Image (cartoon, rainbow, N blue to C red; front, side):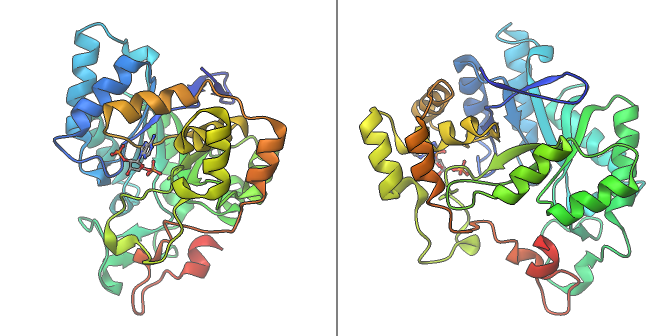
Length: 316
Ligand code: A2P
């Protein structure tokens, strides 16, 4: 299984299970199935509303001897309402309690967006703090502190632009080690890939299959379906594999971690097999042509009347 190496030599399995949109009642079986299949990396977040159930599956896998904690890579994220200095450690401890583990392997700032305490999704301007009120560097220092305490082995960010990564690196002791962002053939983010390679920042691709199960509220009516793209489906047919497997293999061959979500046992197994598939140079070139800068997760849910965030200042 391909791994990505952190600065201290730690290795993260590049292929993992996504749990965004995995419903309570489904995610327990999905995590168990995945670990039994051989997955060694699970991507979580408190906003997904299912960490307790993910934790129940983890505990069972440990108890049944299917995997040891130290052989599993567990990532979770800091929700936007806990960006204040005093709020980061309690938020992480709640996640640890729900996941029923002693430490995380990786803890990420979920969004460069700060919300008032207790707000999960914002509706009005007064739900937000601006980044002047709680600068990202302040949140990052609290991330460094929980890492020093051993509550998480690595720290990083998610949904950060190159500009935001640059300013954090200047202001802080420890550079972020990971940026988790949306990435797939329609949103290849080559500038980000080049920048992160130079800076020694690793990348994880979320929504690698196009997240077609996103809530309707976050969807455009006419959005193109990545899994039905003619080039992707043809490459799949030529190789006797599925479109999802093409998308997963494409990400891994760019040395980018990938966390497809599934709650179906068949697809969990199918996606795992993709980690062993190599695409040829010609196929990689054809897929490179598909880039169209299309975000499925636009971030428009952070933009409200007179609020501090705009799509321009979110993505810079
Ligand atoms: P399901 O959970 O029923 O398998 P993303 O990771 O980009 O957010 O995409 C997740 C969506 O893709 C879910 O709707 C998931 O459905 C579906 N999915 C996961 N694996 C596959 C696959 N191998 N083939 C087709 N759809 C898949």
